[in-house]
Image 1: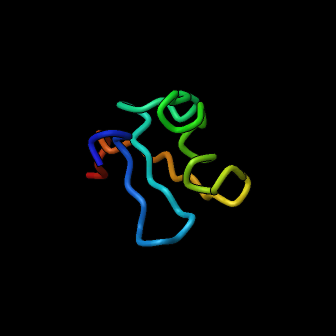
Image 2 (image 1 turned 45 degrees about the vertical axis):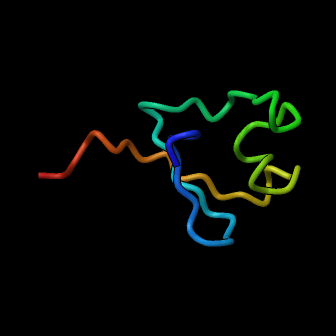
Image 3 (image 1 turned 180 degrees about the horizontal axis):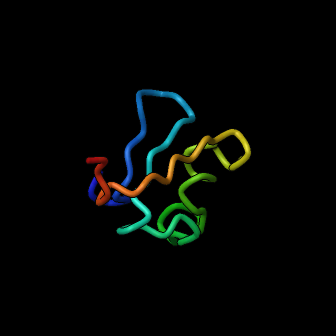
Length: 60
């Protein structure tokens, strides 16, 4: 989890990413220059549902 600062539930295509700590547009040379959604979606980012709720803001 620390590598991407994101969390994937099981083998689903739903990913929670912390926008305060991780830019989802970043590409990773060690992962065939894919971004997070492309990597999780096996090369197809449209298969992935990204949740970008800030983890620093908690409701009162």
